[in-house]
Length: 257
Image 1: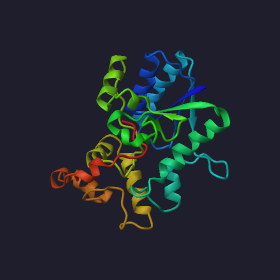
Image 2: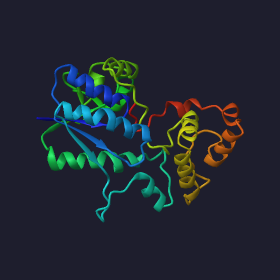
Image 3: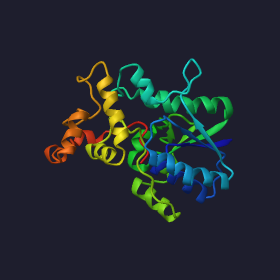
C-alpha cells in the first residue's frame, strides 16, 4: 500500500512528516494542495526545507491546484473575487474545493491503493472522525483509507513544535490563506505589518463582495478591514477591541498549526 502525506504547510503536517520517518516508517509521496493564497513565508518554507528533504528521502513531492472546467488553475482569491463573494465561516466550502478535492483527484488517478496521512494533532482529535465498533468498542476512523498518526501517538501541537526544532528546523508559521476569515485580529495586524500589499488585496476582496457590508472577513469588531486598517494607522484598534472567546475557539477546516 502506498503511503501519502497530505501536507498543509504548517506545524502539524511538518512534524508528522519528520516523526513518521523517525519512527522507521516509509513514505512514498507528499501532496501539497496549493490554494494560491498562502502567506509568502509558507511557500518559502516549502522551497527551503520540505522539497529538499523530500528529495533526500526519495519522497515524491506533488503540488496540486484546483482546475476549472476550462482547464485553468484557479486560486481561491480569484475564484471569490470574480463571483463577488467572500469565504465564510458558516460554509467552509473553500477547503473542500481548493484543497481536499484536488488531493483526492490525484490519489484517485495515481494512488488508488493508498493510505493518506492527515496532520491533525491530539488537541484537535475531534476532527479526526473517530468512531467505535458497536460490538467490540474498538476505536477506528470513519474513513479507513485516512489515518491520523499524531492523534494515535497523542502528540499535541506544542509537541509538534518540539519535534521540528529537534530536527534543527525553524517552526513554520501557521498556514492558511492570508484573507482567511478564521484569523484573529492579531493575525490581521501581522498581515498588515508584514505584507501590506496582501492586506490591501484582502480589503479589496471584501469591498468587492456584493453582500458587503452585511458579510465581512473579520469575525470580531471592528470587522471591516478598512476600518481596522485605519485603527492600526492611528494605533487604536487593538486597544479598543478584544477577540471574542467564540472566535478564538473555532478552527479552520484547513488549519495546520
